[in-house]
Length: 135
Image 1: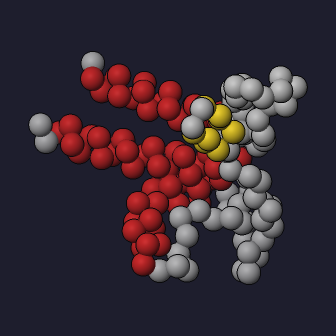
Image 2: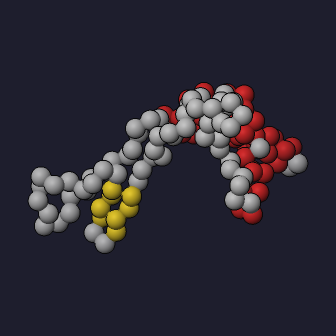
């Protein structure tokens, strides 16, 4: 029962991430500020609470989508899955080596993004299975 719930939660989170990270999906929450004119809402993606201002934005567009790298390659869904699987290792390496990045900018867009998320999900499923089997 716990494994089914875990799989369901992981799928739900993945679907939310996919829909929330679509192009042009900046979250916009405008809270009226006391003594402000009603016709001037806060700037796009800004949450205004008295005493606190929070910027909430989705990532912008990638200018290198569908452009080849120095070797003439464009990363697709399979490389996206691979990059997602190795992302924990590349994260640690990128902390010490500025030339290493977790994400390939020369990709084919949505398919690479989906592959990357699937690869990250695979890592969490494997880690969850390993931790669950040791109990």
